[in-house]
Image 1 (cartoon, rainbow, N blue to C red):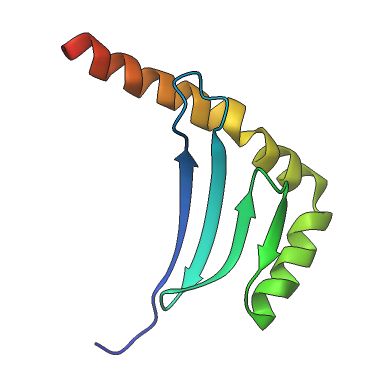
Image 2 (image 1 turned 90 degrees about the vertical axis):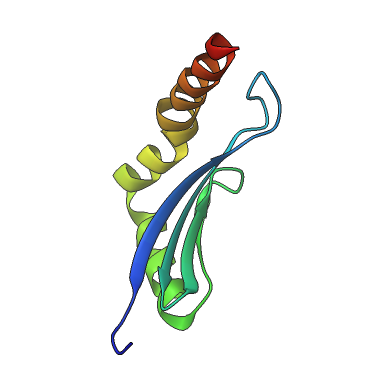
Length: 92
């Protein structure tokens, strides 16, 4: 219907069992259009729209935010993947 739709999504993507290829993606979308994304492989925010480019410039200057985003593979992704993988393996 009428209105706006904005959301943020964090993803941990990997295929290797030792998590060596793990990537953290943090995406921001407005009305289904991704305007800003952090990719831990690139180590920076990238803007995909005019406003997203401005947000990326500001986010990349914010040292605390950058440290947190860059550390997410080790602080968020890897521990949760290990817990999930263990839970799945323990059920078989």
